[in-house]
Amino acid sequence: MDSQDLSKKVMDLLDDKKAKDIISINVAKVTTLTDYFIICNGTSDRHRKSLADDVQELMENEKSGMLSKEGYNSANWILLDYGDLVVNIFSPEAREKYSLERLWSDGVLSDLRSMNNTEGSR
View 1 (tube, rainbow, N blue to C red):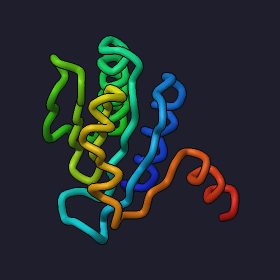
View 2: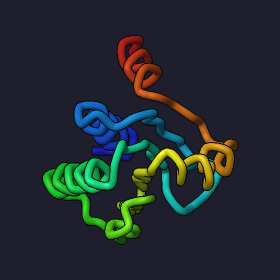
View 3: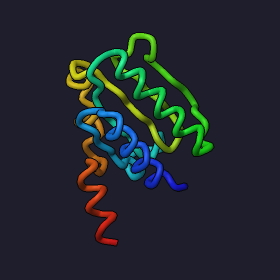
View 4: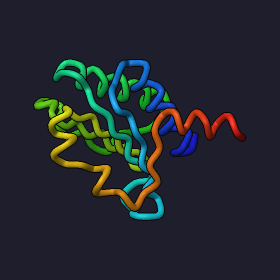
């Protein structure tokens, strides 16, 4: 499965699990760090940890190995790095503070609606 399909699958999972303000930023032409950043909010520490656990389970099922996991214990900003895909699960306050959307504004931003619309026009 390529990184775009994996990104869509992770976004769908996050949506199913009630994550808020889910976006994907394609940064493949901007950096060599990763192809996609997925960014979302969780409503509480417990919700953010649950989202991270669900993403980990999905990625294990997809045979995609995690390179690193940061911030799980504090659950203010949980980062899951899978190489071609980096998942960022924020508290609303941390998301506003770090503003990754602004930092990676040279990338191509997509939300779940735009990804679903693109899929339908193929």
